[in-house]
Image (cartoon, rainbow, N blue to C red; front, side, top):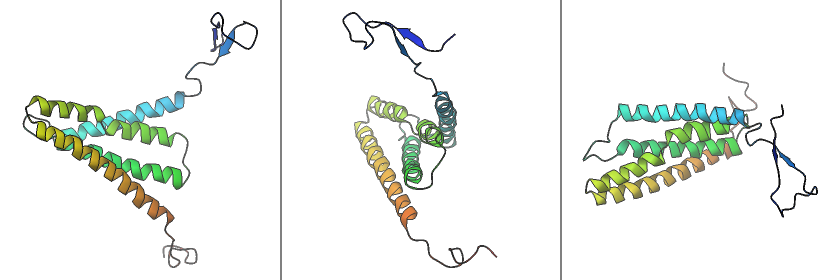
Length: 173
């Protein structure tokens, strides 16, 4: 049995073959490895975020959501390092980017909790804290990804000095 599906063109549409059937490959053909590594990475990243919340619980009433803020800023910094490293640095396996970038870091950083925290702060009658959290997270996350990407780019492109560990020196003695 073929894994392809047969689709009949709609009346009046051009199928290019005189009104016959059109064979289309299934949507996920060849994508299962990427879907699998994103799922595993997402579970790991979400577990790490949950662990951070257990280690430093700050979600109670009358508290500022520092844990979510710091997780999102740290995750953005790591995203800046990672994306520069894999696009401008050493080549990596094609599944590393979906595993770590989309899966782990996507599961670790959390826009949904950020949005819920803003809503909670408004519901608690703390609009100043809600707006401060909204702006602080946005600025800190963008600053972290920009600074981390810039630093990583500089580290990748800087000249390697000759000497003990350079081209002429051999290695550790």
